[in-house]
Image (cartoon, rainbow, N blue to C red; front, side, top):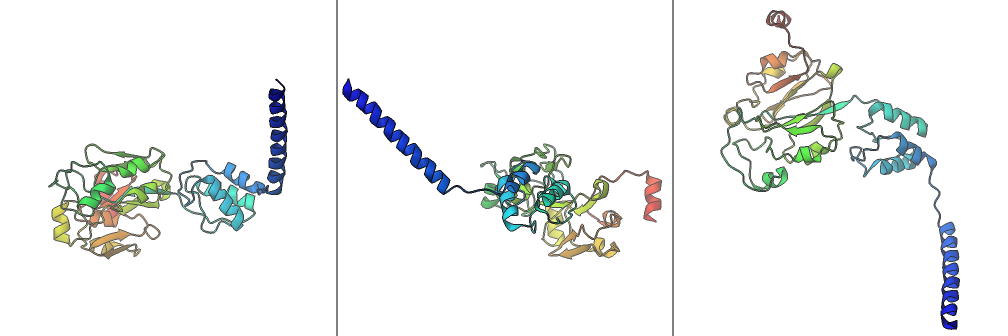
Length: 283
């Protein structure tokens, strides 16, 4: 009985000593965090998507406070309103950025791009792209396994069963860039949403010569340069047999859309005008 009592007493004393030691160590090595880190984290949307280039909102907050500025730091989910709040907490200025949205730069639907192979492996774009060029003669287009859909944490992407291509819900898209990182073919791109959501872009990245690209996909860019010639704002360049529209220079006149012989250029969210009004506008 006495041995049991002594055992309890010894364990109690040891516990008290260890508690005291831990308390002293905790005080000695205690790190006082800047309260602005918590304030910035609270101001951020809390998506922890990594779109800012950091592991999460806490990591972004910590980096911003330590740097003392927002140079090269931007939260695409929160956008300019959130960054203004963050800048106010730090007492610095922030760069104004236009809201962006992901776009699919591929016209290779089932109708436009005939399938010549039947892939029966793991449903992964990364794996499929590493094994061979794809199900069609186009080695540049979407391979259709949905890696971009799986990477999107906001439910902004889905695969269209009729076309086989990803579809972006611009109301849900936060421009975090995860789909861009996930696509092994670099089909996904972030572009400015544009005024009232209006934007024009070349939905093709095929770098093959015109005849080869057209044979692989009926709606491929053939690098003819007609769009660049008709553009009065020098927003279009043709390089490696494919056209590209600089959204910072584009004035949304849509002349390139009408000029493109294959329909490779897409105009998004423009109102559909009656035929007569459209003809007058072109004149």
